[in-house]
Each structure stands twice: as structure tokens, then as C-alpha cells.
Amino acid sequence: MKILVLIKYSYDVAEIKVDPSSKELRLAGVPEKIGNIDKNAVEAAIRLRDAQGGGTVQVLCLGPEAAREGFRDVLAMGVDDATLVVENADGVKEAAAVVHVLEAAIKKMGSFDLIVCGFASDDGYTYQVAPRLAERLGMPLVSYVRQISLVDGKLKADRDLDEGLQTVAAPLPAVISVAEEAFPPRRTTLMDAIKAKKKPVNVWSMEADLGLNSDQLQQFNSLLSSSQVGIVVHRKQNVFKGKPAAELADQLIDALLEEAVLKGAA
Image (cartoon, rainbow, N blue to C red; front, side, top):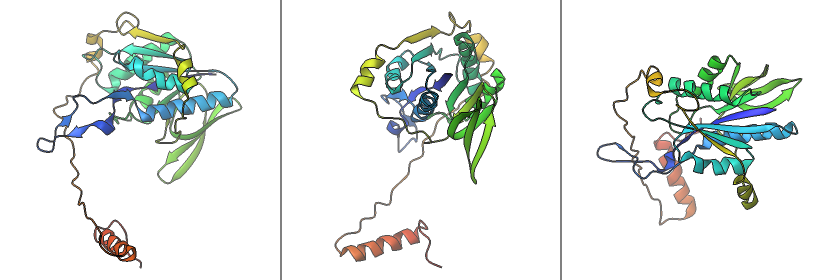
């Protein structure tokens, strides 16, 4: 079974600070990494491959040259090889353009039985890549997946819905997006990291390898971003002390009730 996972190298959003006066995001010096959501997608693919007793898991990333450093983590998890399409920052901005590049790369890589994405990216949260890509490739899409397996040659999946889980089946090849925190990534060992260094990493140019240029991709960039504004949350910083634990607990509960964090007994 051949599985492809789409991953993204982006800002570590936990490290982004907000200027309290201007509300602007402080991006200078913020480290970048493979997103947590993307690692969940990698874990889902590896589990399915191993459950089938064999096959390959490859990852594809559209991003800067520095993304190669981030591949070490997913290669150590058990990915067989990685491909990076070096991003032209002038041409790839919106999901439509991203999908256009990914489609070209996937067709160059060959056929796959399953393409796995996160339900969104850690930074963009557009929710558009998986459904747009499935439409472009003419494959069925199963979104917000929590469990996956193969039954009689078809994909069987449990989907996460607001009111519960929905079990569906789809023919292969297919595209899936995994639900948030559905597949916690495994811990890797030093031996895994050593093995990862020997695994192949392919680096492609959008122009030379995929035949795409900035002018072609500009037609997909129809939105204009005017600004990015952060939200500053001011904490109350209430401190309860100087009394027995039982009284402090009562004070805490009263404060939570007052803020409507807890609801009182009927």
C-alpha cells in the first residue's frame, strides 16, 4: 500500500507573541517546525501501513529550503522518504495556489492508494487543502477521521461529527483529513533518529521540476491580506491564600460560579 502524507513547515504558533500596544504579531525570531496536526496525519498513515503488514509512507511538503531540517522528526517516526517542493514566496499564498502545486507534485511522484492530510494547518486553518485536492485529483474525500482501516479493499473510517461519530466506507484511491488530536504521534528513540539520517530526501524546484512559475500561480491569489491582529487575553490573576484548604476551595468555587465558568446546582 502506498500512502502519501501532506505536511507543512510553519511558525511554531505557541511561540508567537502579541505586542500589547499595537496588537501586531511578533514574528521575528519565531522558530518554525512541522506542525503538530501534520504529525498526527503522519502517525495515522504509519499505523495503517503497519496494520497492513507492509507498504510505504511518503511525505510531501511545500515550503522553504529550511523545511529539510523538520523532516528528521517525521522520518524518525517511520516515514520512508520525504519530498520538498521549495516554495516561491511570490507565487504561493492561498490554498488554491498551494493545491495547484501539490497536484503537480503528486502527479510527478506517481499513484498512491491514500493521501492523508491534517484537517487544517497549525497556522492557516483554512480547512481547504484536503477538499480542494480531492476534487482536483478526482478522488473521494473522507474528512475529520478518527479511526481508519481497510475492509475488503475499501477504506473504512470513523468520522468526527458534532453529534457523534459516523462510520463510512470509500473506494481507493482516496483523500482523508484526520481530526484534531486523533492520532497522537509516537515517541521516537535515538536509534530512530540515526536511521532517519539515511532515508532519502528529494528537493524539487517549482519551476525546474514541476514547470510552474509565479505568473501561473498568481491567478489563484485573489485575496489581499491587509493586516494580522493578535488577541491579548488579560488574566484576572486572583490569588487565594492565608486560609485553610477547605475555605480556599469554597472561595475558588464561588469565583468560578461568579464568572459563569461553573453552573450552580439546580
